[in-house]
Every structure is written in structure tokens, then in C-alpha cells.
Length: 325
Image (tube, rainbow, N blue to C red):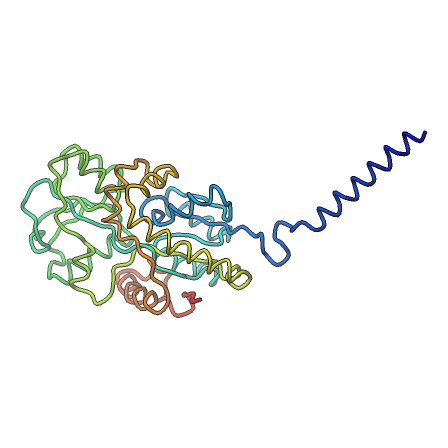
């Protein structure tokens, strides 16, 4: 009997100890949010390359919950459902999501400038003027690639003087380029690098970003970081910490392409490390926030809006789209 009482007493004592430990341990959201894990999403490709080191570091410290998406439509569904706290997305999608969620998401930083290039199977094209009368095989109809190309052609007096044949996927066009079936090809990175490695006859003829800079006072902008406004209000320190870490990650990727390419491939942002290493210098991965971000995006959104208002959600974005810490 005494032995039974002793066992029961021990069990009760252990239960009380475990209860006390559980009570003192922080809850998942920590009450104050100390242990809240930011849900971060990114599209694979250049939009997500700058995030590679954060994703890699997170394997050990587990501060964030990451989810990678194959295309804009997949991550768009998550954002419209307000299931992500932070996301790396195309700039036109950021404006559209902001409108459709009634301002639930705001832009915190520019993370990618131009990633578009025109390759040639030959040596005839060395400037934009050389495109007159030719056919460009391109990817990106109805999105920023179409509007950027149209803007550059118009500014160079080539409106309606260049034919453009659009393809539904970059992979399809990249395959045709690798097989010598098309001569002038406009694609984004990393498809440019992948094509160059498969076909020695191809060369980069025109850098769309550089041509944009020649005819515009503001930068070509293709990718950005959006944050959920509610989370930014609730956990401003966490959002700020992430942005600082993202800035450091971008610096690391640009300065250490060989090492970063391994992280990029390991996380399937781009499938092959050698392609990622060669593509990084042409991906224009950046971190721009604050007034400079607002100025560059306002100018870029104006071009998109003039080309097609629906590309930015139907109305010109205003100051409410932007987040400044």
C-alpha cells in the first residue's frame, strides 16, 4: 500500500513538474509573437535567387517557413488567400494582388531588375536598330516582357517595324533555341544561360535592361518583396529582421556566385548549380527600399499602366502600395 501511494505521489509530482514546464515554455505564437514563424514564399528562378542564403541558413535556425512555387499563378493563389506573410513576386503581380486583397499586401523592396535578353543564332544583330524587319521569338506575352519590349521598340522608332512571335512557356522556346530552330530569341534568365550552354551558335545580342536604361530615367524592375500589412503591424521587428537578412543574402549571392549556386540548386530555385553560377551576374539581383524603391516602381508602373491598365490591377498604383520601415 505504501509502495502504491509512493508511486502515485511520484506520478503526481512529475505531472506537476511537466505542467509547470509547459506553463513557463513559450507558446507557438509566444503571446507577444516571439516565436511566430513568418511564412515566406517565392517563385523559382531569378525572383527567388536572392533568398538562397536565407533558405539555406533556415535549415538550422528554422526561423521561417518557406514555400517555393513554380510560377506566378501558383503563388498568386496563396497571396489572394492571404496565406503568406512575405513573398518574392513579379512587380505587376504585386500591384494586382494589392488591389484584389484591398491592400492586404504592400511592397517592401525591389529584389530583381531586368532579366531579359535577346539571343541571336548569328551575328547580324548588334543594336536595337538592327531588329527592324526581323522576327523575335519571345516569351512573356501579356506580362512585363511584352510591355518592356514594346516600350524599347517604340522609343527607338521601331513600333510596328518588328515582328514578335510569342510562345506559351520559356521552356518550349529555349528548346527551339537549343535546336537551332529560331534565330532571334527573347528569354529571361536562367533560360538564357541554359540555352547558351546547349548551343554554341547562340550569343547574347541585346541586353534589354541596358536598352531600357538608354530610353528611361528610371530602372527596369521585374521582381519585388511584398509583406502582409497585418503582419508588418503586428511584428514590425520580425519583418525588419527578415529584410535585413534578405539584403545580406542578396549581397552574398552576388559576391559568391559559386557557393550561392550550390544553395540555389539544392533548394531547386534553379535546377543546376553550373547554370545558376553563370546566370547570377545577368540576373540583376538587388535590394532597393524606401524612397528609391517608390520612385523606380512608380515610373515602371506608369509604363505598364499605359500599355495595359489591367497589368497593374486596373488603376495606377499609389503611395498606399508601399511599405517603409
